[in-house]
Length: 175
Image 1 (tube, rainbow, N blue to C red):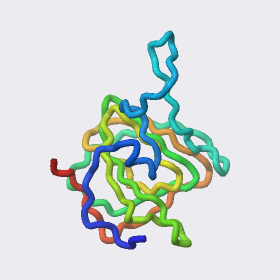
Image 2: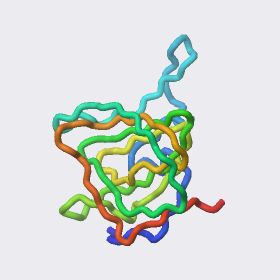
Image 3: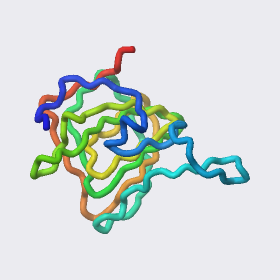
Image 4: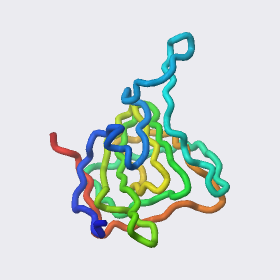
């Protein structure tokens, strides 16, 4: 496990394969397999079931209203929800950036494996589900907008925080 984060992180386009260690990509035409419904006018595609009921949790639907952030952006922390998944679905074609890392397997206390730290561009036609235990930066949008978020709600808060030291600079990838 790497104990120090990289100095800079570039944003990659999201694909199901690249994002698989962190969760699931929803929509965006990347999952063509499904069942035709509604007299053949709709393709119903299975998504990974969200994890929302662990330890007396229940599903809760929210609307998150984002404020635009500008690149380059300094990332100083990651958070993790160990008991439940989080699903982010943009409204009105809002694109956003998701910064993620897997959990370290060689530590006593939960912490991110910073060697797996990645940033993905999610276009406004896709959503993502973060698997339980996936470390992530709070929502990053380059435009004001809204997302529907499905997450676990319970009396006990399920949010671990990890300071990135030194901080990481998030930058757009040069094409």
